[in-house]
Image 1 (cartoon, one colour):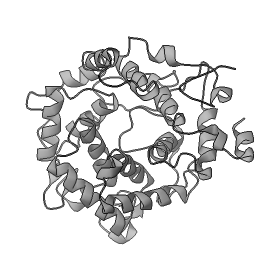
Image 2: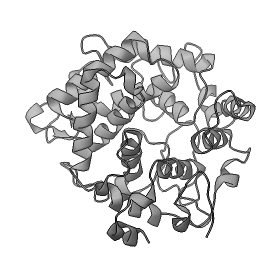
Image 3: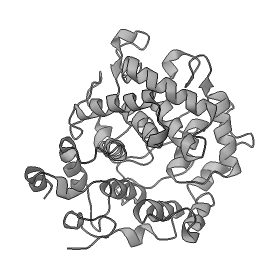
Length: 341
């Protein structure tokens, strides 16, 4: 049995402590995230600032930024959604997931998104100039990423947050791309992937800064996620349950996985709800030697590689460790504890 101070209570369930591996200097992104998310170091810590500064000088962030045009966009100066996964909106998201600092090149990218991806008529971010382009996943992802880079108080970010909350309260998480017919709103079903992205965006807003609408939208989203078994992922879907739910990935784009559902629930204080115990068991069963988790899914057609499938992934392992840090296993029922063991 090992003792892992930053994960109290989880030692019996882990096959090793990956911290030394995560802190290696070969991956500044993983090192920075481990220092801050697992060890609780502040941004003023010299090791933290050094690691974060090195992110943009190392792959994959360096390769992404090298492909950027001086005006701030990638590929072409449009809404930035297509082509996947080389256009502008995806790079802003990926760089935020890597923990990159808001250097000037990234600020230009954020400013391009705010100027070109935001549709004034809808008060939402859109993939194209049609109402069906204002998907919950896109808006959740961009709100989360823009807040990471310090744009949380920007008027556009605030307007989109409120409009997104209104949309959730009015329509749930219905999405035109989870439907029998994109143009027929009556066939739209709620999208759990979109719900997770929206919840994570709202979770990133400090509780004291959340409007009443955002607070109500969070409660609606939590109810939606918890009304189903996250480990089964049998959420409404016209195409059936996607296999992507069950493959741990990095980075995630519009799609999600079971782990990200747990991330959203933990960030909103619901990680110890008995209804997520089966998802925790599923997650622990994915563990490989040394307290590490594999990369089971990653994106193609990106500016840089994020690792090889089936190999241990520092980013996936960090996602898991940070999530477990927000859950105390002692709260599991005896039945669930036996299931985990």
